[in-house]
Image (cartoon, rainbow, N blue to C red; front, side, top):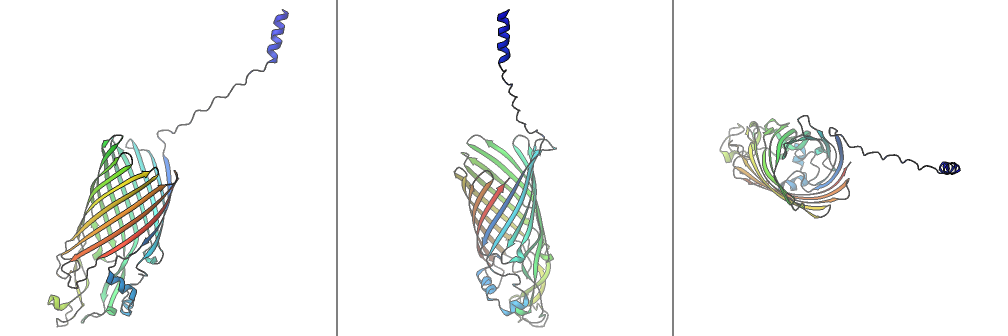
Length: 388
């Protein structure tokens, strides 16, 4: 009996071990939840030839001749080169699709601010979505809208109706345009393994451009087919072919043409001697543009990659109008070479450096002026990107 009481006393003196609370289980996001991914970007660019002018036109802009001041030819064309600051915000989201599978969407706004040629500053808006289709496919829709863009000043009329029109007798007006472009694309994974993947890409689009000059409106349904590949997880390859059949209304507008070349009294003054005579004739800017694009991007070390891309575009103008010597029998070749370096500083921050060289050569066999209208351009861009 005494032994039992002693044992009970000892038991009462010992403190029981505290019960540890159960660890809460991590909360998993439901499969039907949407997640957002905001991003902010700033591009600082230098463009050596904003207006895509050839050497002769560049000299004329810099000369700022009295006749051009009166006509308004270079109004708001403040300089040949410029710095462009482009801040943009983007909101991406992904989640379950009403059609099944996953859906990704985004909305983006950017503002291009030109430091000197401020009249060209403009807004650009983009919307897009991509739907997973089956095990290997993705269907995408992208829309871009530019509400107002100053292209340059275009010849609108002439004050001399019966003689040779001088530079001061020309009348130039600002050419603005509004543009909307939509593209429907499909990407399908053809091959996928640890060391190599290959995707096929096809896209069809629609672009509408409305200009303040009706004869410069454009309608185009772009088409693209291509391949995207990744090898050894560090090298990306790209090869694409693009085709655009651009239709323009082909309306009459004021032109300046030489009567001796055509053997026609263009301004109705009874002679055939006027040079740069005022004429009101049909102009057709319709054309076919075919492009080939090839590119490669290599991750040289972790978080650092460099890329090289080349694009060649051939423009075949289809005008058959007699007095439309700016476009009849005309072919352009347009080459772009782009070098890019990307550095991921962290999960949120990325810096990009880009250089682009452009060269356009124009063959205008029907143009009696002999002007080449060739141009070249250098663009340098520094981009800072933050992803939330």
